[in-house]
Length: 359
Image 1: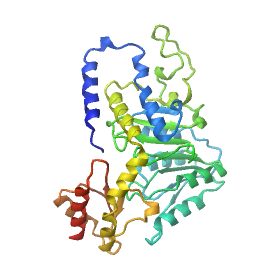
Image 2 (image 1 turned 45 degrees about the vertical axis):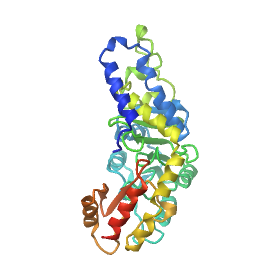
Image 3 (image 1 turned 135 degrees about the vertical axis):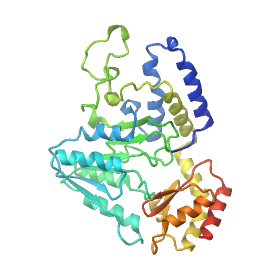
Image 4 (image 1 turned 120 degrees about the vertical axis):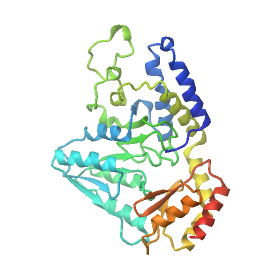
């Protein structure tokens, strides 16, 4: 979970003050309040705003996509070992319901060229029997970067749907949904989008334009903005608006997320990622000098990556060593996950380097 920027906190406080008196709200406010979310998120992922939906969680957004998968193509779904649980639970349930198999692609046991070989194995496994590929932009435990452009191309060659969980990198790592030929991109807002908990955003390509949403909110219908003449019209609003969560006009959280997205667009994920790369450069040789494994540069992100000792099962001791020095990392399986952002400084990395050197 990311910390709030001051302007995000201030946007939340101001929104609470406004919410104190609902009589000032106009009917149009219920709809215009989410427009900046779609606009800025669309800029970040290179999408038309009409294909962006407001969601409460990544699991919700994934369910919207998976529930609308065709069931008459392909005999199996494909994912990767250690994929985030919500992603696996969602696709496993779909597989069970429709008598499909779930093919899990594991990383190589050897650590040399691990990311390269893992990506190659994923791409090789996509064929005419693949109904859907569901995976994250990067591995949430160790930051292994997946070649979504090549994976998306292979999916299209075999008419497989590509559903991507972008929670671990969208906002800090550049992504283009069209270049990668992604059919659905789901993002929780509380991590690298720097927003509040319980609000996220999802991209649904035109493949999902005729799908059935998880809930039939009146706000997602074509005539919903006319409060005086609400009818039981069954026609949905354009694009992905049918997939908006009920009560999507979050009068407190939406201004907060809009503020964080606006700032991310201004900073640009390209520049954020480059800052993280330069910041972490002195750390890499220190990690390697201690015999610890870190993914190759070509297949790891700079804002999030994992380290481990391939010879010993001592990740817990490494993690505890960081804690003693007030270095906040995460223990994920065998991996100690390290993250950084624009608020981190060279002094932070110096302390981290010293701590690793003394392990």
